[in-house]
Length: 136
Image 1 (cartoon, rainbow, N blue to C red):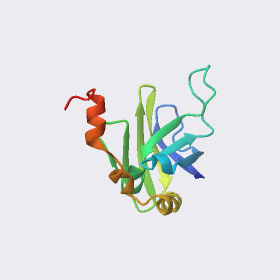
Image 2 (cartoon, helix red, strand yellow; image 1 turned 90 degrees about the horizontal axis):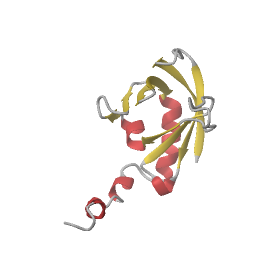
Image 3 (cartoon, rainbow, N blue to C red; image 1 turned 60 degrees about the horizontal axis):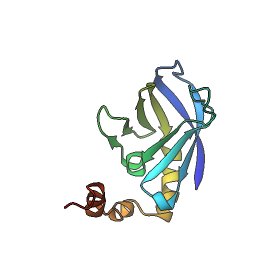
Image 4 (tube, rainbow, N blue to C red; image 1 turned 135 degrees about the vertical axis):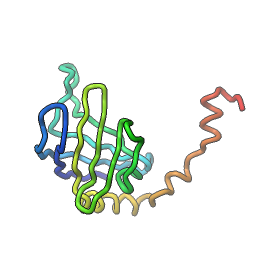
């Protein structure tokens, strides 16, 4: 499932402040905790990379705001905009997503996989055991 919306660059390191660009949001029920955001009109700084930049963002962060302060992704929900801060070694930007359009997209994802049901699918103990090579 996917949707396209126009977002606004509120602040960035590449001089796009104030620009509006389309992004594509994709949701795969098989990976229900994630929404893939693709910047369809942006290009990678790597000349050998023709792919549009993508960010994997927690669906819960888009729905409720949050993130780790100073981390790669932070979100704050307002009445009209979700302010999303993205940071990478190449730079950072603050984006404004229209809440009405974002909520319409999220509502469709909830019809496929209810919010928080993706969390119940996590098997933390098994994942930790696998990461530790079976040592408990």
